[in-house]
Length: 181
Length: 282
Image (cartoon, rainbow over all chains, first blue to last red; front, side, top):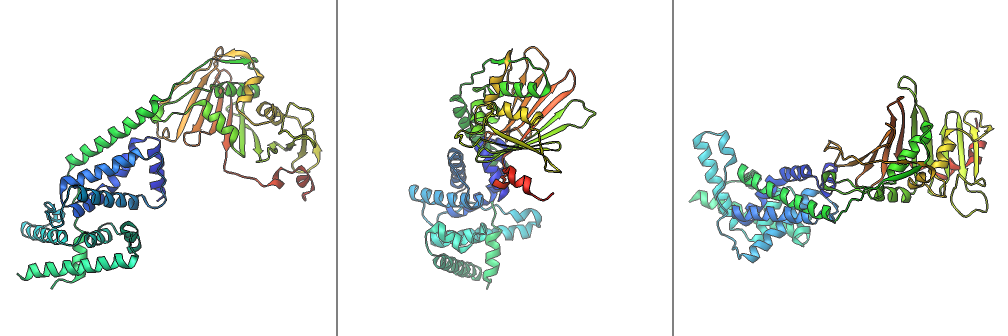
């Protein structure tokens, strides 16, 4: 938190190193979230870039009141929604090819199984209603608490948790259904 | 049937980082955006270096140090573009004058082998002064009936001094008094007011320092006396635009003076009250 404050302050002074530090620190989490929310790799990269450009442009008036990661996550979520609205991306479209991170550490057979499982998961995530997908991803991938998710989704914490539970239950049904077939 | 916990773990591990090429490309684009923003900000700045007139030859170290500091600080339009953030002398002097309280510790060195002489000065929000020099504790405040702030050139000022250990009244002389008179001759603490005490022409030019580890946070101004090798260096904070250190050096004899400013230590009213000090048990 203190380091984030320091980095934001340095970025206000125009420090390129501060920008690199912030970007490198949060890029993976934000990109993973954007890809999971949007489905397209290119779209997700565009969202991430847009978020950081806006962040740079508004840095003079920016005041860090919570965590920087939380702020950037909120920006990504809002931007992803805008993209979905504008580009009429429909839930259920391809989420893009998964990169099986685990595959490098496993044998070819295990790697292939891992990739297949990830692809199934991505497909199942894409079939979730958007609010449920958002709740699941925000809770599991970014570690946000339900009250924080509630703030982003502008609903009560109970509703956010319900969306998460319904989403997870639905994911489970879909994945188990796929495995049984 | 896969349990939900298993699915939760799988979603958590679903990380898809950017490939190296995309990462570098995006970061380069963002850095260019940042640079563009800095250029736009810098374009609005017009540095205006000017010669500073001083009206007194640099004699004793104390006066010389203050005079050069004054001349440096009086470079009111001097700017520094390090790190893309503009800091002008006018900003520094203005912020220094508006700061509610501060303390300054002055170290006077005459010989690298000898211990430096230390003087401490505190200013309260009400412009009350307390100074420590050796065994002497000095208190200063406006005389009763005076509405203005302190003016150490005015004989009506109440300046009293005590021996630190015995708390007996002593004469309020010494270097601290000189510094106070130079720092606050017209009723307010100002770095600019020091300029008005000189009589010699001094040309001091600013030197832009390199991009050092601390250059994001601090801005440094270098000054050089026109006809002597004496020089001064001033460090200020970029964000608050307050001076934190002023160092004077005379390479001819190794004399130096360091002014270290502190803006975080707020003393209570009793600290500045001479009668409280005098009454306190020894």
